[in-house]
Image 1 (cartoon, one colour):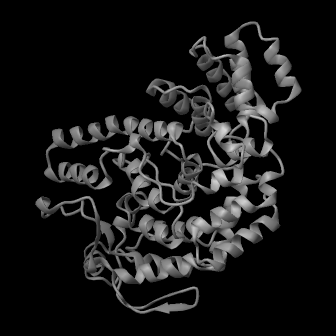
Image 2 (image 1 turned 30 degrees about the horizontal axis):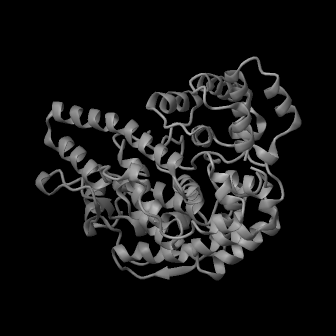
Image 3 (image 1 turned 180 degrees about the vertical axis):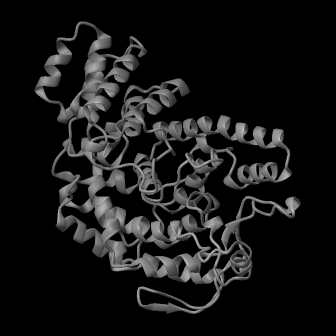
Length: 451
């Protein structure tokens, strides 16, 4: 690799160069990125995996059966299927001919985080990414927001299935029988406003959270039909008897009672809000430019978001055109997962589960297990604290020892680092006592661990 722009395209916009990929990129790095913007087929590695609906339906049928062995078997099946779903997604990213599209899947999946740390979700979480995120990464933000907010996995993760309108028929019964004054759950509404759309400084208040939570009451899934187990399913379901009746007022606008459509109307307005544009623009600029992104770049992206009403293809093209994104080759640190993917792409290796699952568990970034709805961090401090850095280097050293003797350090160094290669790194690689040690030094170098 000779071009610095090609290095940036492959690492900042992509997931790290695969063998011979630089030759495709170097003639026109910007065109190579832009060619990936648009609908993408489902990667072959993900074909044939169960969707969230059958996974959840099987689980909730077992839970409703009253059979302890059936419940335990269903939970065990979910736990066993989860690593396979992680590996399928990882292999898809390593083999992808459209790594910018895959990076955007990672970005938006993290923005709309759900986590398998929530009991019973298991392989339904990777299915959520395939169903609610992948189809929309170059579509409309409003469509992705709708898909996410209505997806059973998100509704379970943020407890909307437990939210009951105080004045709904179900709510009146709960208040009468249990003496509860509050029956709504605000988790989903709060995260939609704070994390998914307006941002923490987006101008909403606690009453707006309550009003949105009321609008979302009744949004649930078909796994909770305990009185009629034969009709249990794993898809979205609206329950009028749980929905809070009456108008809702959010950010000064009143929405008339309209059942399930009420929440959709609010989501559409949130998707077009200037604070949402600013929040999304800041996160994108932080991901692609620097931990503390320049205001000018954020302003540009926010304007494109507003002008196009959240057209993510247009927003992606605007990213490519930002001069700031091409100004420096190594401003960002790869996450642990990005490092694992980039390492396998650079060395041309097909990963085995033990070479991915166990290291990422040790690093603390097993996919689909973010510790909170805020997702994984996107700053250097989140990934290269001293202990984490030592674990990364030790894993890379072990990994280098498994590589074939036909992988030559000089070739890997030029292919993976090229124009970003520092003189000190070249010197240490040349002085390495063995081929394994030289490969380890390349993979553990600051240039390889950054993007």
